[in-house]
Length: 187
Image (cartoon, rainbow, N blue to C red; front, side, top):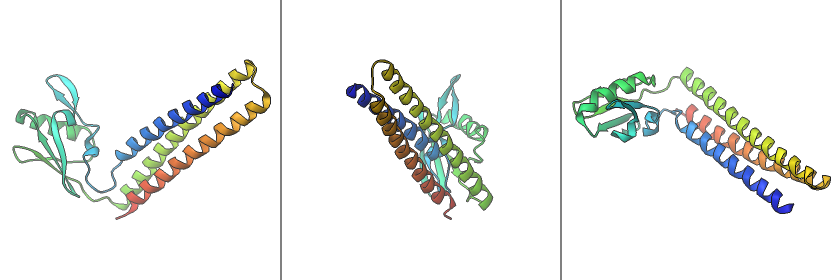
């Protein structure tokens, strides 16, 4: 029975790590004023009839803290990439120099910063919901073990351990949010 409980704990930790990883990737998409290639991660380009991620048809870099450069691997794609960036509604207006695109990242206004903090807070709430769902699944597995002969004391201890693991991951989410909030609000 103890091996089964350890397996449940390991599975819970693994699921929670995946949730944290997803949360971190969502936070990276929220810009904090500095230019980053990750800002264009959601852009899909029509590449010979099929939607393709921008990173697979062009080289995306940052020239400085306020400028992103997009160098397509085929010059014929330049206009299509520009159209895709505009259609992605990211608030960018790419400029073409004939060979590549330059995207000037405007400084954030106070109002926009607050909106981005709200969006980051929403992502943290989504991550916490994921953590709580993982906790519920783990507790359900412990209850199934009780039907297989797990003692009540071991069940209570297991539920307490599951709650401790969940609290640790919730604290990590709060810490990641605090870092992102500080990053967004810093001018």
